[in-house]
Length: 98
Image (cartoon, rainbow, N blue to C red; front, side, top):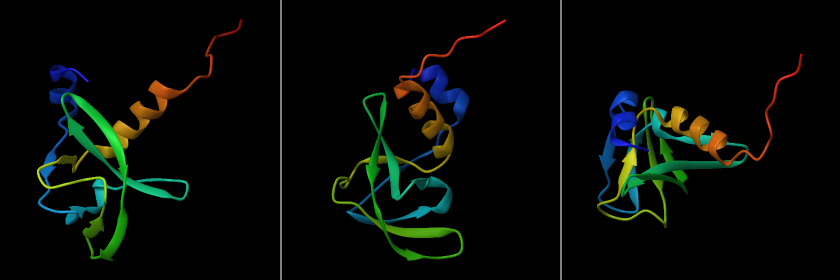
């Protein structure tokens, strides 16, 4: 994702301090039986699996073995990234008919 697209989407990032940390609920991406967060690094987003440890009204405490101290995770607009991720990896051919 280019810098311009990043700015237009107004994606907010959060630097984590350990394998267990608090996130706003809107940061969590759910798909089928999986839950995850997007990590931002070197201009790219990658989805990492997390486990929900505790749930509050607006916040979740999560754990991830793959994420580590200093990683930047997406704390807003995660659903937009998910849609873009699905579209970018979709192998379907789209056409139009008359």
